[in-house]
Amino acid sequence: MDTVRKRRDNDLQPHSTPAVLKENVPQKEQQHFHSDLWLFLTLQNWILDFGRPIAMIILPLEWFPLNKPSAGDYFHMAYNVITPFLMLKLIERSPRTLSRTAIYLCIITFVMGASIHLVGDSINHRLILSGYQLHLSVRENPIIKDLKPTSLIDSFELLYYYDEQLGHLMCREQLLALSQARPPSWERPDIPAELRRRRRGCRAGLKRREKRRRYKPSVPSVIMGNVRSLPNKMEELTVLTRLQWEYRESSLMMFTESWLNELTPDSLLTLDGFHLVRADRNARESGKRKGGGLAMYVNERWCNAGHISVKEQLCTKDVELLAVSLRPFYLPREYSHVI
Image 1 (spheres, rainbow, N blue to C red):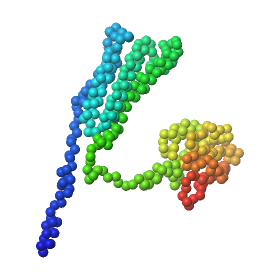
Image 2 (image 1 turned 120 degrees about the horizontal axis):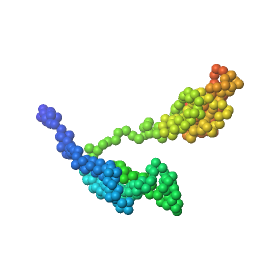
Image 3 (image 1 turned 30 degrees about the vertical axis):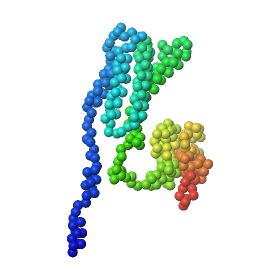
Image 4 (image 1 turned 45 degrees about the vertical axis):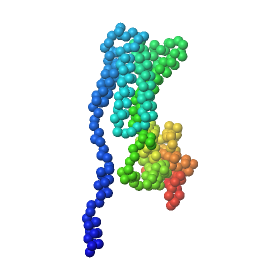
């Protein structure tokens, strides 16, 4: 009886493990909105960045000769000095621990890009006052077209590249690079094993096999449509095969009413990565001069062009038939080819 009572007493005692774990887990600090940084960033952007061209328009040109810095240049200088300090303050308050090397590289890149943009923007403003037209390229502008020697035009093109491309790229992309930076191993926090996220599943599942067999599916993907004149839709089809993966990775694309004839060359119907098989309407056999026609595009990454053969082609008044035999790179064992 004593042993039974001891066991019951032990069963009635609460388990302490979850409570200990909950006490040991540090509660996450509530993140508050940094209104001071938001205010400073808003003011410096509105005043120094957006207000720069307004100040250049309002203030008279007699105050700032062309061989001296203008009001916009002073605004730009202040922007180049204040913004890195605000970025450092923003990074210091970040909940993520970032690598100091990445922070320094991003700040240096920003300062370099802003300085390049300052010089290019200042010279660009003076060119506009001299008659430079922004909607024209450097070589097409009337004030630069007649420069002697012509090598000066190359120098202006280099200046335009620094101002419009390199300077903007170095100024705008450093925060994206900083947001994706990971701290080094020695700066990462030590998370207890019981709190670490467990990754479920495995990497050998169905989606991984589909990704590995990207262009070799067990069942071919087919796109069908009634195009009603294929030549005038080739531009749209080219764009779809380049931008949308559904068209780019499709095994077959079959179209009716292609409206092709013997005067339409294959060069007008080419698609990168696809092999064309066409069956034009025969006016003599069908008794019709317009319409009809079949066209099929075979993805070359799904089936080699040498393994495509036309089995039968039929054109009558009522039926148009195109039978094609295909031996793709991959098929289930039960099948030897596809028709």
